[in-house]
Structures are given as structure tokens and as C-alpha cells.
Image 1 (cartoon, rainbow, N blue to C red):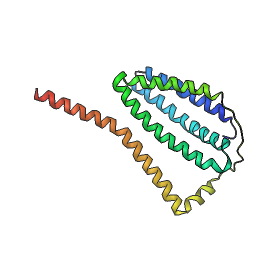
Image 2 (image 1 turned 180 degrees about the vertical axis):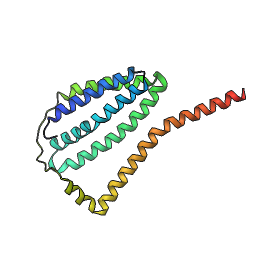
Image 3 (image 1 turned 45 degrees about the vertical axis):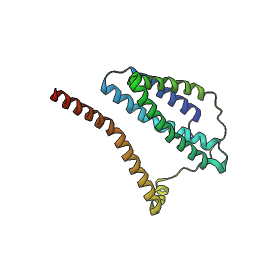
Image 4 (image 1 turned 135 degrees about the horizontal axis):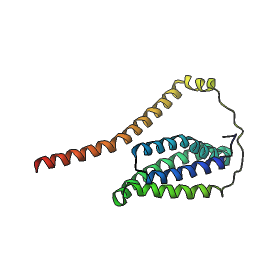
Amino acid sequence: MEKFSIKNVLFYAFLSFGILEILFAISDGYYLLIFIRGIQGLIAPAALTGIMSYIAQNSPSGEVGQNIGRYVGVTIIGGFIARFLSGLFTDIFGWRFFFFALGISLLMLAFAIQKISQDGSINSIKPTLHDAKEVFKIKHNFYICASIFFVFFSFQAILSFVPFYMMSLGETKILAVQKRA
């Protein structure tokens, strides 16, 4: 992030997300939807890294860890609330509504980012592959990182699988009722 303006990275990431969400809401083809999600998956690391870099740049040196922790906590809460609201709005307005509303919100956020200041600078030391190996040689660090990876992998797998399973349960019940009739 030190080679690019964090403000510009965030602006273009959220602008892209907003446009892609609106395209997602108006798209009909399954493969197009998957393609849009793939592009968003490529943009997400830039946005997340930009946000954390901005927090690191603009936090007092003793509060960087605390502020990153707050960001992670708010992200988790926001993710839950977004999933809840998307489910609620999908039942009321259909699946496209939430993606369209999210797209408009992201576009507004992109232009709001233009108003933030870009203060501070990071005097960072670039880690090397050797540094990462040294961190993972400490068993405690390795176990923590492996646990986090498997928890998030399981979480994502379950959240990706559950909607299809729930739909199949509904289809099974519909077929059972039709057979009885």
C-alpha cells in the first residue's frame, strides 16, 4: 500500500464494488453472477488492506492494535446484520433488492471517501518469506493461524452450503406433499 494512495485505492475499490453490485442485481445468467462475484473476490483484498492501512496510518502508535481490533469486531457485527437484513429484505422485496441497495450504498461510500484526509505515513518494514517462516516456527503462532484458517474455511463452507441444503429441504417437502395429493 505504500506505493499507492490509500484514499485512491479505497475510492476505486468501493466504486467498483458499487457498480458490480448493481450489475449483480440486474443480471440474469448464473455464469455472469459467478463472474461478477469472482471479480469482487479479486477486489476485496485491496479494500480490506486499504482500510487497515488507513487505520494504521491515522491511529496513535499505541492504539493501532486496539483500533484494528475494533475494526474486526465491527466487521463481524456488520456481516451478521447484513446477512440478517438481506434475508429479511429478500423475503419482502426479492433477492435483487438488497444487492441494488448495497450497490447504491457502496457508490455513496466511494464518493464520501473523497472527503477523508490522508494524514500520516507508515514507516513499515517489508517482511520477507524468511520472516514468515520464523513466525510459523513458533508452534503457538502456527496453531493459532491454522485454527483461524480452518474456522473461517468451515464457516465459509457452511454458509455456502446451507442455502442449497435449505432449498433442497423445501423441494423435498413440496414433492412429498404433491405425492400425497
